[in-house]
Amino acid sequence: MDAIQVARERLKIIKLLAQNGRDVAMGKVISSKDVFKSLDREVVTLP
Image (cartoon, rainbow, N blue to C red; front, side, top):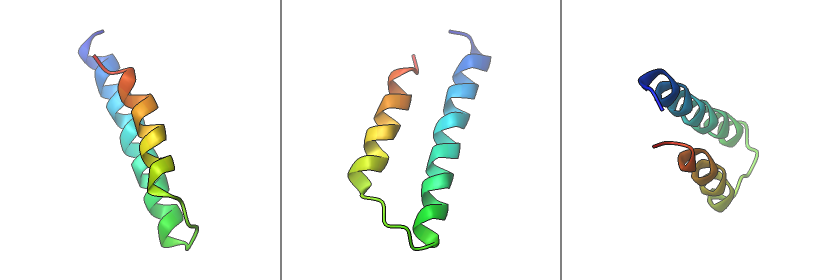
């Protein structure tokens, strides 16, 4: 996996966190377990 792919994967994770942050700010309740579960799925793809 090259540096560009790694950067893309990290960007995906950042976007995911940002989306969850927006949802929480708008009052949508998301359990932290779900957030971390989706993050874990993304992180698995990183080297």
